[in-house]
Length: 149
Image (tube, rainbow, N blue to C red; front, side):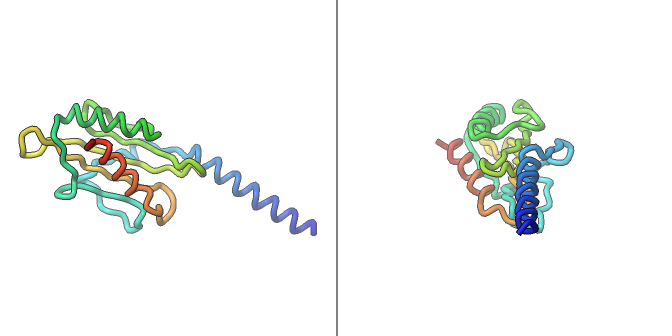
């Protein structure tokens, strides 16, 4: 019986330690701040990459769209870790509510060939795990729908 109690306590401590680590896991900008158009898609399905023809387009200026997207991202709980709104190239980290799993979201807003139009390259990916259960896709769609309204 003692062995079972000890094993359960050890498992509980391990789960607790993992939960703490997820909440404080570092997200070094030199690793996570990427240019979406230069990304090679990972082998795992825990990401969304919208670049080139798949990059959403909006009417506006790079500065204006980047500033609005920054408001949306921060309002959704994302924290800027690299880049700047004025450059139109920004990387955020957003953590899940329950376990604190970190996701990195790199965004680059750039002009298109059409006057008054900008494109948004976006790469949203999970740091840990193989599947994200649709979290990154839902985030990207949420941010873009708010930007379009």
